[in-house]
Length: 336
Ligand code: NCD
Ligand code: ZN
Image (cartoon, rainbow, N blue to C red; front, side, top):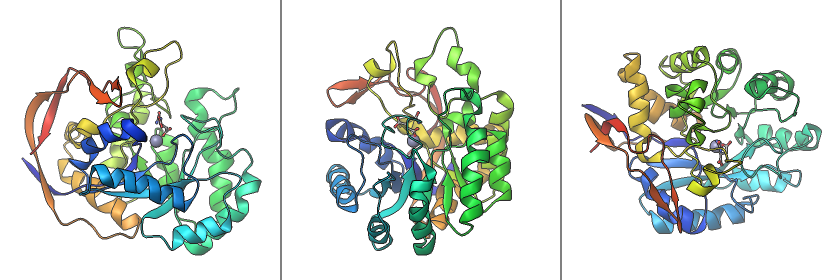
């Protein structure tokens, strides 16, 4: 049995409309707060839109505190940054390189055009959350994070040494090393702690294991596991739970995203247990993210019990279905 302060999810996709309504409770059951990604359609680019989106989430789950983000585009203005600075509920901006992932068409194409925005974010101490992959077609997909770190991230941090940055859902040894040696934090997903790239081809092509950044080799998974369980506060929990309708995943061009929310904390516990580090779970899941965002730590406690249950085969997703990670198979930890 594990008792820990209630955790928060520092990287979450809730979608919108009827889809959001059917999935928000899976996260609210476990997490007190979550950072809500802005890549809905159309994307959330203003504080007013973020607050309207937030109200819809709260109407479904009043006990849950969604922390909103703005999608950084070429049109983001200094005034947007100041509004975020002054907002209690909108707390960061998300940088998607154009074309890097789901609904990222409006992302940043030219770094120079957002340089002034970074300047304002540094000045007003507004966190920047980064999807760290280059999109250049000739770069091997397994190298896109590593190349991004050298070509894009490093110049940003060199020019803006005080900018508060989270490199989201890191997947490589190179990212771990970079975070360890620079003024930057990182989120790590449960699925990148539990799977390497073989899982994409287990007994055939597995669309439900496809996400971005794509799964990497085993030695990268080991590096992530070591970082997550190190007790270093630069690394904290962000599920990147990213539901898509079954038909969009199981298609001739299946989209990226893994739906882990229904068992998120249990999956992290499973990963931490693999390396006998359950004592490090609370810091990673419940303390370090709150500290980074300068928010109070939660005070409620939750209990996780070592008890096996079966993940349902699917969940309602608006008028469709979503297949969760580990559908129909055993989960080893259970939240009471
Ligand atoms: C995310 C989504 O579906 O919105 N997909 C994913 O594979 N992680 C977007 C993202 O975070 O890259
Ligand atoms: Zn994401």
